[in-house]
Image (cartoon, rainbow, N blue to C red; front, top):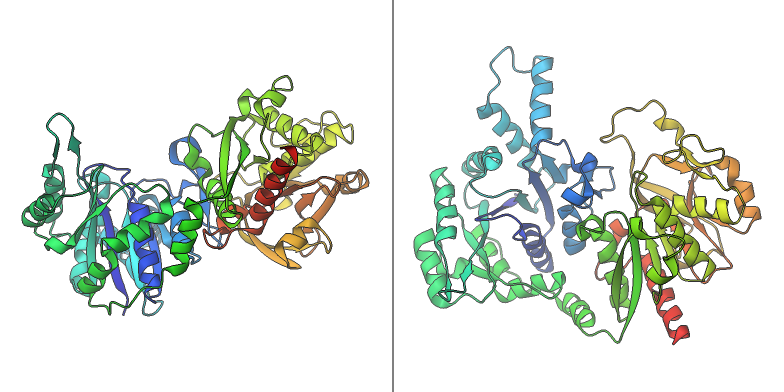
Length: 533
């Protein structure tokens, strides 16, 4: 039978519920348990696909083509399991499903209500019929928020249905410190617990975020007034790197407490590789600086999977990868040399819209002409095509029709299957697709395979009318869809490392298993730096 762990938040948002949940997943998996994870978000967007990255952060794409919350990226990186569209559920999706059923007449003409119809739909998505697993379910928002009420009521009902021995509640809460009095305050957490108790829920475990270690007196006070076992009051301090959190929570006995609460055998965990990976991360032998040239640099979470993939590759090379955040709107032909001075690699990530495009093109040209390692992702590949067409082929107005609809040279055009699509949400080419790699190419060397699979999120592609001109001028279209129709990857054989992909390989990188493209890019950047010393 599946065991369930519900992770909620108390006092304030932004406490790191996702990292706490992911860390618990890693600890349970290290004990040999099959783990799956879900995120329930209280917003009314059907999914985050149309949300502004500066407000919401990265849209994480699953193999089966779901556009999901960035926390699913953390889940996959920590538990090293591929999740699916059932792993991220929003209030918008819940209400849409109920209303669609009402329109079909599924409720027999009855009145559709918050209880039972909305809560029943939420509970239906809790239930896992995929064997004996531990399901960790994070509920977004904060206890007391009106938006979270349906989910908390559904948890109350669900816990009664499956039995409290099979479904526990973990509350991630804040213990603020007042400098003026030199005191840690427990009242806010007590208030959050009272909110839960008022709707019939009681937390089984408190995970306390704090700037300072919890004293035993504080732990005892929280246990007494929050009605939890003293051993179930745990601290979760800030970590230098995210991947230390599972080890810190192992020291706090988080998984031990959870196993005890659920009646699971508390097996000896195997965390040796994880500890080794963290040790390598903390003690690099060298450092390298790469430029990330994007339009959403004001919120680093907009590129969080890219950042993590760079760091993963750095660990493998025993290198601290330092990122120079470059707002592409500020880059011009006149200042590009100064803006990128001293970097050993340039990366242009994905994105949409015309803002900052000229700056990205400047950065790509500078990297190409100055033999600086370059990695382009999605938009970064399309713009590599545009830059090459303009500055090598001499097609001065070459562009993507997304960005310049009236260009005479649409080297990037709309995919045929996207013609006539009006809705923005969920209509892109999404999910995992195969690519065939050219033997002898740098890409083939890095992957070590003829056929690969990567996740995609785009609706524009390379215009095949320009393939011959591009290849005649020295560009290798080294990755194609199996039917040969779609250009998936390119490289410049005469360049030390110039490689771009239509995909988002960052989504498949893991801290103890870095992605081949990022591994190659960081390796090339290190080599570049050593040559320029």
